[in-house]
Amino acid sequence: MNAAKLVLLLSSSLLLLACAAQNFHGLTKMKQVDYQQQHVSQRQFLLSVTSPDERLSRQALLLRAAELTEQLTYDWFVVRPERSQQSTADANPVVLQTRVILGVGIRPASACSFHPEQIFNAAKFGWSANELSKDSCFT
Image 1 (cartoon, one colour):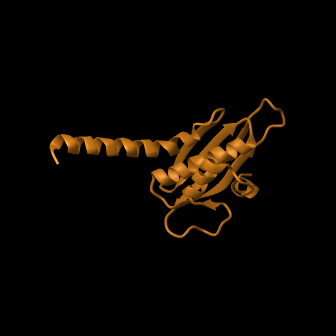
Image 2: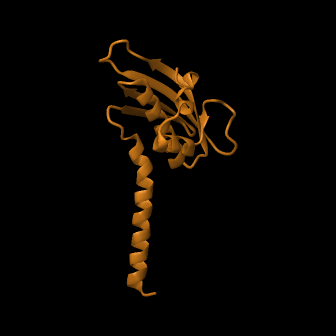
Image 3: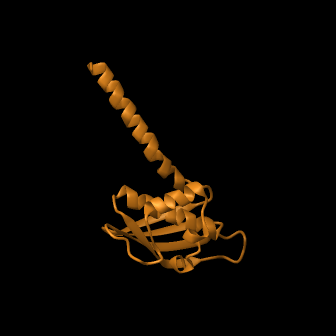
């Protein structure tokens, strides 16, 4: 194989990998959602998500936690509520603030623990009640 073919093959492979990785990063680019994150410790983050809808806030929070878990090469994450505020007026947003704890190995039995793939699949194929009905994970 000559050098030109090798360079073309490597370039094509890198482009394909970049496109595949970009799919997940696009998931949290939801309209009407604002994110803030604070790195608390090596394995913990505070995520704050604001949107006009509680369901959208929960989806966005889970997606961002799954992205962080994958980006930092952990196996699973647990969400623990820090603060939740839902407005009674339609014009005011819902704010969810959650501690995300990342881990490696066997996932805890907690109802509030998730594998990133579980969340990515939920987002890809339509959210089910399983991922979003765990009220104690968010409030």
